[in-house]
Length: 354
Ligand SMILES: O=C(O)[C@@H](O)[C@@H](O)[C@H](O)[C@H](O)CO
Ligand SMILES: [Fe+2]
Image (cartoon, rainbow, N blue to C red; front, side, top):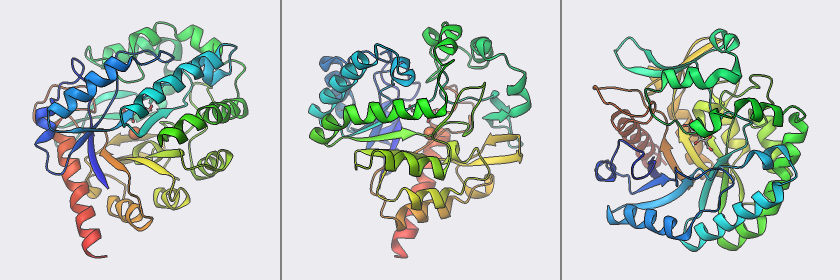
C-alpha cells in the first residue's frame, strides 16, 4: 500500500509539496495537468516539468487524477475516435515518463455533485454535504450559479467554468444516451486504449459515480457491486480497473463496501478512502476519516483491502475544513493529513496482526 495525497499542481493548490513531504509515510502525490481540457493531448514538456517539480520536492508522481474523458467519447459522437487517439497519445507520453496509474470517470455532464460545500458540523468544522430535497429543486442547467456561489472562487475539479458555461449543450448531447449506450461507449473506449495500457503497463481506475445513482435524468453506470462486476467483466483485463472510492460508493447507504472490495479483488487500481455520516436516506455529509465520526466502518474497509491483497496507491479523500484553513473545499491540508495518518495507523495494526 502506497499512501499519497492529491495535489492539483503549481498555481492551483493551496497546499505545497513541502507540506505534503512532511506528512509521515506520504512519499508521492496524485496529480494532473489541471489546466488541460478533456480531449486535449498532454504536452510531453508539461508532463516532464510537472514530474520535475514533484521530484525536486522529494516526492514522486504515483498516478494521475484525472485524465478526463471528452464528452464525445462518452456520448459516442462522430468525433470520438479523434479524441480517443488524443487520449492514447497522452497515455503513451505518461507511460514514457514512467507513470502507471490513471484515474478517470465516465459520468455524464457533472463530476461529483453536492448540495452544500460548507455545511457546519457540531465541532465547528465545515464539510461537503448532499441533500436530495435541495438537489431536486435545482435546475441542473443553472448548476453553475449554485456552484459558483458555493465554491468561493476556487475552480473545482469537474466544475471548470469552461464546462459550466456549456451546460445546455452538454445536456443536449446526452439526450439520446441511456445507461446501455453509455456503457457500450465506455467499453468501446476501454478496448481502444487497451494496447497502449498494456504496452506501458498502465492501470486505468474508473472513478465511481458520485452520488451513486442517476441524477438530473442523466444515466450513471458505476454505482454498485452489480454494475462494477459487469464493468470488470466487459473488459476482463488487468489494465481495466476500479478506483475504489468509499465515499462515492458509500453515498448509497445500501452499498456494502467490503463486499465491493471483495468483488473487485485484484482489479482495484487506486483507492480513495473517506467516511460519511448518514443523517437520513436523503441526506449525508462528509465526516472525518475516523470511523466513529461518521457512519462507515473504516477498519473493516482497510482490513478487506489488506485481506484481498491490495497493493496499489491509496489516498485520503475529501477532508473537512478545520483550524481556519482557507483551501479548495474538500482539499485542505490539515484534515487530509489527519486522514492519511489514521489510515496508515489502521494499516500498520492490521499488517502486524497478520
Ligand atoms: O470527488 C472528488 O473530488 C474526486 O474523487 C473526483 O472528482 C475524481 O477526481 C474524478 O471523478 C475522477 O475523474
Ligand atoms: Fe473519490
